[in-house]
Amino acid sequence: MRFLLLGLLVAGPLLGATHEVDSATELVAALRSLKAGDVVKIAAGDYPAGHFVTGIEKLTIEASDPANPPHFKGGKEAWHFSRCPGLTLRNLKVSGQSANGINLDDGGEREKPVVKVLLEGIEVSDIGPNGNFDAIKCSGLQDLTIRNCTISGWGGQAIDFVGCRKSLITGCVFTGKMGYSQHTGPQFKGGSEDVVIEKCRFKDAGQRPIQAGGSTGMDYFRPAGAKYEARRITIRENTIEGGMCAVAFTGVDGAEFTGNTVRRPEKWIFRVLQETRAEGFAPCRNVVVSGNSFVFERAKVREEINIGPDTAPETFRFENNRWLAKDKPGASTPKLPVVEKGGVYGEE
Image (cartoon, rainbow, N blue to C red; front, side, top):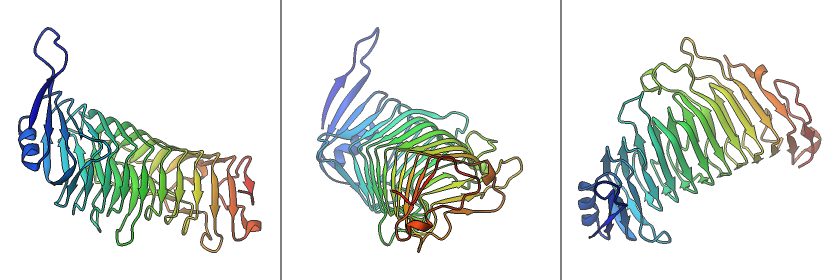
């Protein structure tokens, strides 16, 4: 293992070190000696899972060669990071975990979110395969960016946000696999707010390819005492193909679904649900659906929007969407809970 000092000399010691490792033994040694600002560069090859890192600031863990990422196989979790602000994970591959692929959390300090985390070029596959097991699980993070990542085959959620704020998922690919339960793709719940998911591609990504909201136990909300599963969720410029529906709005208090392309949903286009009914929680409400393209088969989609009890669909707004029942163009006009403005029906 080569060990190189990094950083600028600013009225004190150097800021961090680079650890270059090319074996599981060297990786374990590097992780035991971590300091704030360190960089761990990992050579290509297969590595065991089960790595836990806590309390290290401005840590970077990345592939030595982005074109040949190290592969972390099997085990319960590949990586678990607790209270690591400024963390960067770049160009890593994980697969075959029985619980979560990558887990990022705030160590249970629900009023102190972990800030400025970046995941880039991460590939996660074959997680679970069944049950509430996530490819990437994030609890209590703020200013989180997940960019250009690929997720295929998972049990619970492809990405699970619990109480995450001011965060972005962009340019990612989500692909479902036979034999995996895939309850939702990305999910934002437990007090999540100001989240954007954009320019992603979904193919057969489960029962709810995107879920704005969800169902969270009261002890897990961040911040504690939040009266919303999710609010101010923006879903824009994505392509969603297949899946039982495109999006489930589940107890969300304010969302936008704009500029997306939806193709061949299996049963519905949207679901409007309320799964958290605790005192003080608003009904699912205030969603804008604008400028999207929906192409579906009327033989499969008999009901465009599945509306559950205790919701407020009358607060939704539909504008300038294009709707086409490809197998029956004359039956393209959707049945919506409110009148749409500027909709186009029967044309792609």
